[in-house]
Image (cartoon, rainbow, N blue to C red; front, side, top):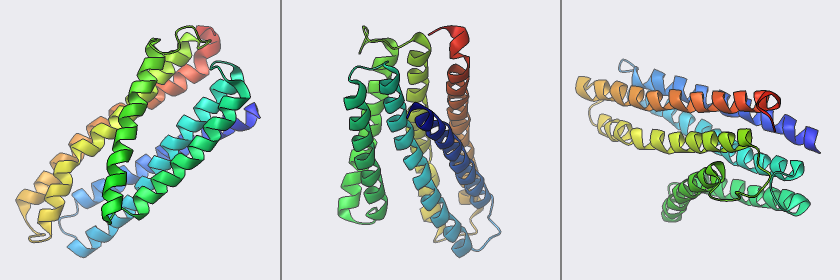
Length: 222
């Protein structure tokens, strides 16, 4: 069981990074694509929104698999009950994320999206509380894992920051419909792209730190 969870945990990380790279590359292509017809750029943006779902899936899967592994290793209380409980919650969370995507153009989708954003803030607080020992100070969580949880909070926080950084991008994008050749708006797209990419680089650094902590834990001590 543990080996299977470990393999899945590693595979999801690659899945996550791959999705992020595709999204960023396509965003860059669209942002610098002033010479392209607007309809073609819009088609590529539809593709970005589809790929963005894979990042959301990866977040849920990493949180779920991480909790299951921690329970299996005895780092968190609850053992098998927590392991299978996390699996059920993770499945429900995945379904919720899928519904947010499918209903995003409907009024109910807007409310679900707001709830989805709230869940990210709750997750960040929970991860930081575990990482700093404010929650579960007497649990068997090793120091390297607490640092890893703190880094994961950084990853989720960067994801939120990227979406906030892209608000200006999407505002310009909507205005481009009326004037696709506007040099001012196209230049603004590029600026907003680089602001979001700067945050993405920080996100990748957090992920690199997570990988390093996972590999070096025997050296750091458990």
